[in-house]
Length: 220
Image 1 (cartoon, rainbow, N blue to C red):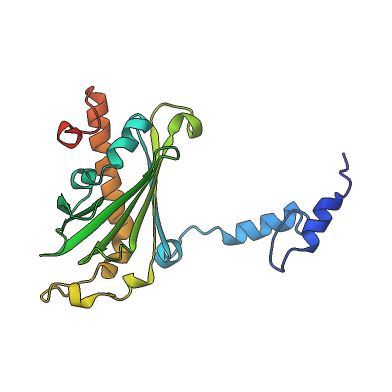
Image 2: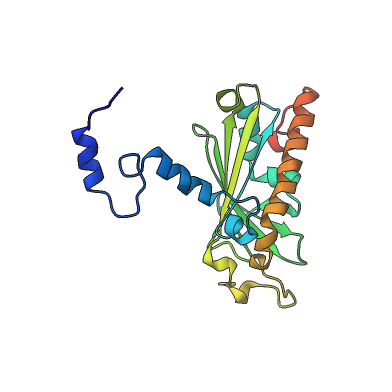
């Protein structure tokens, strides 16, 4: 079957800048060659995790309950490796605790959640709470929609903000601390993978034992 040229498609193609690859400009054979050229058996760490740090996984627990648990900032004390001691500040919605990766390092957290989209974004920063530039972007997806089985899919991404390369607020840092959070960027994926496995283990344990995902002390 021959498909006649579509005038609208021709018009769209005519307005495209150089370098845009569409079926109108690159037949499948040409595009396949480009795709194969991009596939590697081994990828440099910097190429994969240089600007963004994605982790994702399946959780055998209901998505609505998982979202409600994660949407509470205090859940970070349960599933993260080192965020502890969160207490509410005088500013509504802003919490402060300690990142125990380092001695005396305060971490500030504000959780921005959207129940309709089940997105949970943790806006964080070391040392000060005026500018929460470390953004942990999370989304809970109903696994029935994407994997055709009950449960949840968690998508988590971080963007490499320029402040990871240099502390913008050195005056707020504890004087004895030599390490900056950006020094750890190359280990973010591995560290976040461990934390996602923590999240999964806790949620699946509670769901498997008929317990609410959000513990009583957080619901009180």
